Length: 300
Image (cartoon, rainbow, N blue to C red):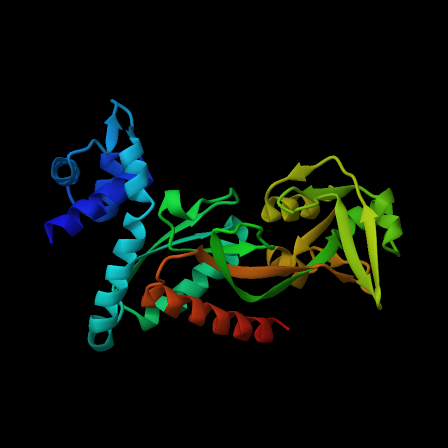
């Protein structure tokens, strides 16, 4: 199994950019990780990394190996998992990425429910609103809002989240309540820059699509921050329902333009194209699909 240990050490080092981070990911010592990589380089007769005091960078040979080694390890893990998991259940680490607010509101409790069914699994969850490169960051599965144009990833749709337009009673008392989609253009609107077209708010009214271009003093890249600004009376927010549900239940935010439906946001689980999907990842995706359906029924 030395070659497998060497390949795992190489892939972890390439993905994290350092022997220390790779050792933490693999659960072994820094010295052993360096030893495995050095042994692999010796057996292949090539340098895989250019080492500096701060970071390791890949050589052309290392880059070529990285294009194939992760898929090879995934295939082997899937094979071994198929043989052994039938009797002892899933095990190992699942590395997950999700947007911050959606991750806190839904993905975290969903993983808690999944973890109860699979006590031998461990989870490394990374919440960020930045784009995550699944290959370089070593992510097994990412939960994403909106549609993706990336050709290198595959997606499984979980469902959709409806958006809501809302404002605080204090804002409405001071500035008036917009009665139509068009009147939103005359109000202070809080712009969520995570949206593909942040200032273009889309509605469906009957069979017609209605679009209004909005402006405001605040532009933020966080649905939760946008909600906080709306609560402070700084403007009208166009937000995913999960980000403002609690505030609406407490009547701290009031829904607006209720005769028009806001844009739906697709929710997907994405993973890399071309790799054998381990059974534990397939199981998590299947669970997330059914759990999201149940969650939506409860919320409706």
